[in-house]
Image 1: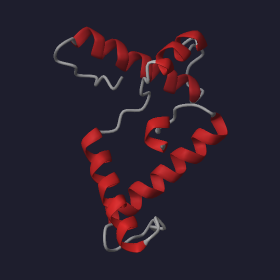
Image 2 (image 1 turned 60 degrees about the vertical axis):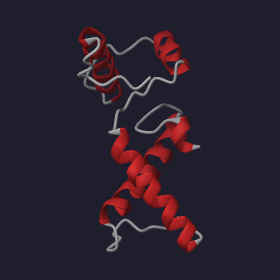
Image 3 (image 1 turned 120 degrees about the vertical axis):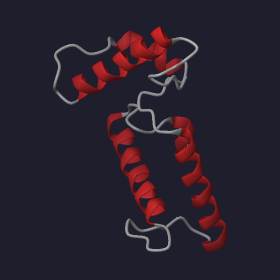
Length: 117
């Protein structure tokens, strides 16, 4: 359930999804009094809905780079400042942050359970 904002086959769906994501994010950040009702969040989560959309292509590319690194080095201990591949260092740092936030808030906040696995 990764519908982009500009979903050509159904622009109305793309716009609706964009508004949902924006309302939830604004509510979570304390910038709005009304968010998405919890029952609807549960329904969407049940579909595997992704509240934070990051380009699948770039996420998959970084993931493949991480797999290669682990195969070569036997671990995924990539520092934030990683001169050999700065984009991978930043990506791994972000994934760690999203995972910690996910664990503490038990919500979809930049990472999905599928991506955690």
